Length: 76
Image 1 (spheres, rainbow, N blue to C red):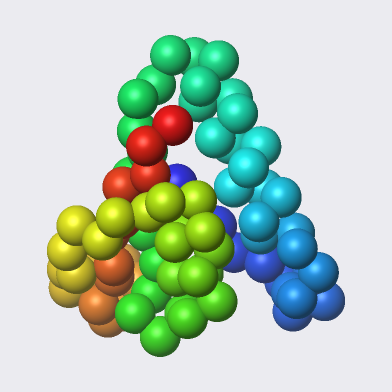
Image 2 (image 1 turned 180 degrees about the horizontal axis):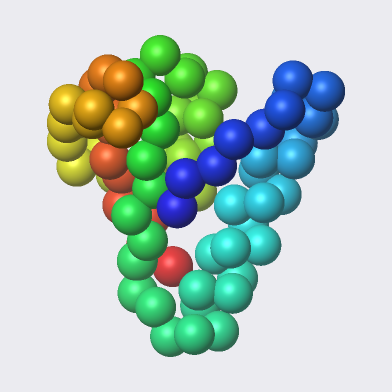
């Protein structure tokens, strides 16, 4: 799971709502956990991930994202 919010949508709970919706669908599908990614500088996304019990797995270099990318697991 990775996401991006346009500036106008930030700070309004949209990211939290979106992650909650994805987790509910994942549970319906019988998934046990989801891999979630965010940039190392995106503190707000890290807090959203942690709000849902995200456990930091590692940080990798990502050419596609142009820098380090944090990987987290959220148990559904």
